[in-house]
Amino acid sequence: MVSLLEFPEDWQTALVVVAHPDDVEYPGAAPIARWTSQGKRVVYLLASRGEAGLNGMSPEECIELRMAEQVAAAAEVGVTEVEFLDHPDGMIEYGLDLRRDIARAIRQHRPELVLIGAHRELSGNGRLNMADHRAVGLAGVDAVRDAANRWVFRDLVESPWSGVLYTALLGSPYNTHAVDTEKWFDAGLRSLLAHKNYLKHLGTTVDDAEAMLRKFQAEVAARFNGRPGVALEML
Image (cartoon, rainbow, N blue to C red; front, top):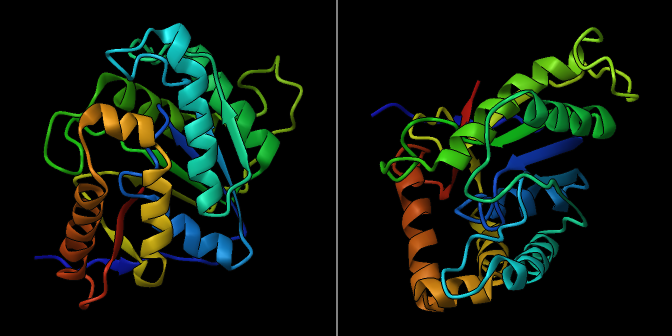
C-alpha cells in the first residue's frame, strides 16, 4: 500500500470546481475548513445548480433549494464565495463553452490551487463516475492551461492567469496526497448535513452521514501515518 504525501499548503487562494451542489461535501469539506481557518481564500464554482438532483421534485422547484443548501454548506467551512454556472444538471457536456466558463473563473479569481472534482472513469468509492463529473473534471483540468494562454478564448476580457501552482482532484481513485482533517471533522460533517433536503431524499440520516465520513477518514489514516484525513490526487 503506497503512503499518501502531505498536501502542500504554501498557497493563499483556491478555486474549487465541481459539477453539482454536494459534490464538495463527499468528502472534501473538512480540508476546506482547515484551509479557511488558516486565512486562505477559497471560492466554489459549480457548473450546474443541481436542479435534476431530487427525483420527487421538479427542476423548477428544486433549483433554489439546492443552491441555498450549497451556500449554507459552504458557510459551515468558512466559504462565502459560491458561484453557479448555467450548465444543465445531468446533461453537462465537455466542450469549449464549459472550458471557457471555467477559464474565465480562473482568470477572475487568480487561484494558486485549483481543486477539481475528479474526471476519472471510476469515482473514489470504486463505482462508475457520473457523466457530469467526468465532463466538468476534464474541462477543469484543461481550463487551467486555457486560463494561462492569452491566445485561447480571446473574447474574454479577463487577463490570463498562469499562477496556478497546484492542480488536484477531489474524489479520485488514484490519490497521491492527503490533508490532515482530524480537527475539522465536525465542520466537514456540518457542511454535508447542510444538504438536509437532499440527504432526506436519499434516506441518509445524520448517523449515516457521520459514519460514512469517518470511514473515509479511517481509510486515509491507513496510508497517512495514522492521521485521519481527506485524500486528493495531485496532477
